[in-house]
Image (tube, rainbow, N blue to C red; front, side, top):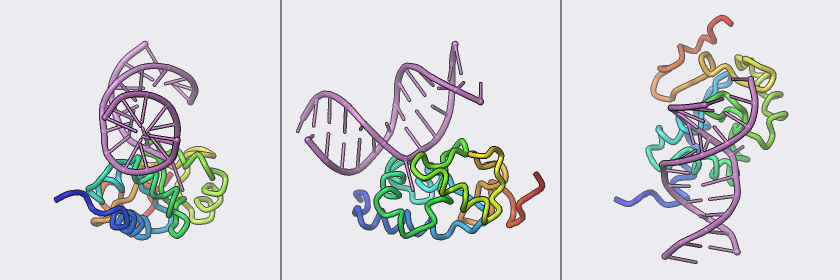
Length: 114
DNA sequence: GGTGTGACGCAGG
DNA sequence: CCCTGCGCCACAC
């Protein structure tokens, strides 16, 4: 079976992003793993094209760095949602990292102490 | 059909 | 903490 259609891939990626709860974040690589197709670069491409309809600011790089395009806007959202920030422009992946199949990897819906 | 680029990831210095 | 190089896959030229 070949890879899913482009539209199918987009829908799938956006679906995962929509599932990300407030105060939590997912890395491009994590989304690519959940989708099971393509790689982190393809996820980023989809976000740039169709990310306008989903909480794109909850999608960050694996090292906690925010998207290079609207980092300032993303910071506003993270501060408003209470995302654990480690630096003025970085997210604390150790506490904010989230996973769709049950809160594994990071912690429960609790945001843990800083 | 090769080349370059990118909202990336990781290892190394 | 910083920057550099390599690998990755899809798309534009």
